[in-house]
Length: 220
Image: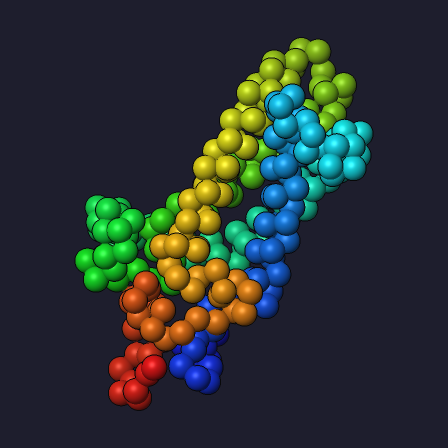
C-alpha cells in the first residue's frame, strides 16, 4: 500500500488493515486464555481461575489448542510485519532517549518510523517466546511420546515453558502501557484501524514523513 493510499478523510491515516487487526485480536484472545489457564496450573492460589473457565479438565484440554491458535496468529504477524521490524540507527538513538519516551517528552525522541524500537522489541520478544512456548508445550503435551534417552527434554521443557510465559507477561504489561498510556490513541487504532495525522506526526514522525511526503496540503 502506497503512502497516498493510506490517507483517509477527516485528517486520519490507515495504520492497520482489517487483516492485521483480526490477527492481532485472535492472538490477544488466545494469549489471555493461555495466561489465565496457565497461571491456574502454575499456582494453587490461582486454581479458582480454571474453575471459572469450566473446570480443570476442560482447561487442561483447551490450553494446548489455544496455544496452537496463538502461535498461528503470531506466525501470521511475523509474515506481515517482520520486514518492518529490522533494527535501524534510529532505533539505537531511540533506546538512548527512552527516558524521554517514558515521561511523554516526545519532542526529544528521534523520528521513529511506523514502529519504534520499543514496539520492535515487543514484536521479537513475543515471537521468540511463542517459538519457545510451542516447542516446550508440545513436549509437555505428549510427554509419553518422548523416548527415554531424551527424557532430559521433559525437564528442560518444565523450566523453559513457565520461564517463557513469565517473560511474555512482562511484555504484555509493557504492551498495554505503550498502547494505552505512552501513545494516546494507539489502542483505538487496533479497533478502528486508523489514527489521526496528529498522532502519526507526534509519535511516529518518520512514518508521518513517509505518508505526507513533500505535500503542502494542510493536515489536521
